[in-house]
Length: 224
Image 1 (cartoon, rainbow, N blue to C red):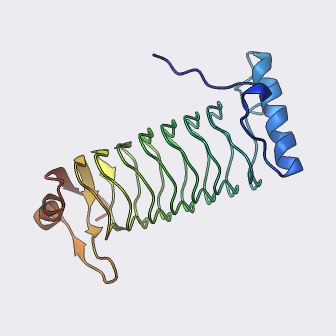
Image 2: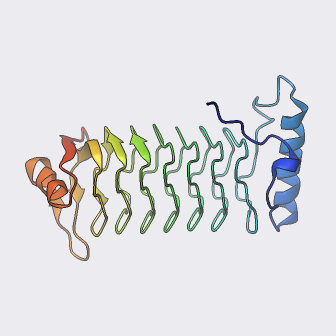
């Protein structure tokens, strides 16, 4: 069944506290709900770079291709939201709840995402390089073609997630729960918690197997 996302102000569960952010979101939704052919064209998308969304609940909204670079989305609920191809570079999404959201092809380099929730989210093709995901929850998330290169993924919940040429090269994943994870990843990966322990190839596969993820396959990253 195709999911229908909210396209009007009536769909907003809770508005941002900040007046400028609230007005920006209102204008965007007014254009979107009008249903014009231009409603998702350049100039009509949500332009919210650097804005503060404190107090908001954006669950279920259509935020496709939104510009959220350097925005503060910490602690914001965005459950089952459409963020396909959104721009979130250097955004703060720590403690945000993105359960079952469409995060495909997001550009999220350098974002702060500690303790964020991505349970059952779709992250295919997303770029989250050099980002902080410590203690984030990716339980049963789809991570096919997702790039986390250079990111900190220590103490994350990766149980039963779906890898598929997922770039974990030069990531830190020490302390993470990978039980039941499966699919191909790109290494090498630092599996150490407090100290460095970089593994690749057969030793990295053995590490996953020892942590209840025998179906994870390893491939060397082209960048090494």
